[in-house]
Structure formats: C-alpha cells, structure tokens
Image (cartoon, rainbow, N blue to C red; front, side):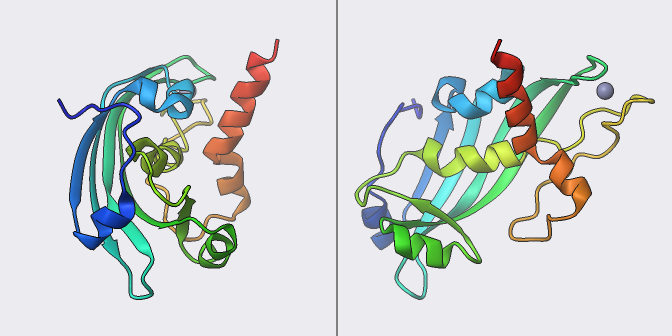
Length: 176
Ligand SMILES: [Zn+2]
C-alpha cells in the first residue's frame, strides 16, 4: 500500500508542513543498490522534511533493508540488515549544491519533486558492509560498520574498501 513507484514528492511543500513520509521501496526502485547485492528485500524508509536555518529544504530519517550478499573471495553467503541514517539537503541550484556540499550531503533536484529512492539510494549503497565475512584467510574480515557521515574516511584502508570500488569492480566484471 505504501509502495508507489516513481512517485515524486513535492519536497518544498512537505518541508513547509514539516511532513513525515513513510515508504516501502522494492528492489526495482533501487536499481543501483540492487545490482550490488545478491538479493534484496523491501527497504523501509522514514523521512522527515523541514527547512534548515538558512531556508534550505532538509530531509532527515532512516532507511533499512535486509539484504543477501555473497563474499566474492570465498563465496560465503551472508544476510545483513543495512540501516542508514539520512540527512540530505535538497536544492535545485547546482552552484548552491556545490557550496553546501562542502560539509553536508546534498541532492540536486529539478526544483519541484524528488523520489524517495533518489533520497535514499546513495546512502544505502554507502551503507553496504565494507568487509564482508569472517572466514580466515579471507581478507574481508570482521566488522560491519555504518559509514560515518561527514566523518573521516580518507585512510588508504577506507579507500580500498570503499563500496564504489566494489561498484567499479562489478562493472568491470560485467563488461565481458
Ligand atoms: Zn570471504
């Protein structure tokens, strides 16, 4: 009942009303995320819209999805619940987005609407575990950690484990 694919939310209107929005997204609504996992369930999303002190539309909330992953090294199957906190500023102006993007997460919109998937998909991708399994000698050892938002993430180790490198790898594997 809450799944309304491709529904565009009038975020300025929602911010004015300080509205809360709850949605359930299927895998087909999160195509980039779905490509990175072996099986995905339904993402539960809860969002709260408001204006920040400077009058920019701001959405906060969380998204959660249970997902199946297979370690590429040892083929171990794992089920993980990905849960991410969201705090995204919605702006239509690219220049403004660049300025604001220095110290916060910004999503560029067309000025009128935005889909729930657009708001949450990048964060869900970043929320994928950096290291998958605990098998030894599998280098993808322990720990499942949430990515720090705006936190430090520029050590070599982090760079190597960055989900985007998984994405890159995935694309390369797909190319033939
Ligand atoms: Zn492994």
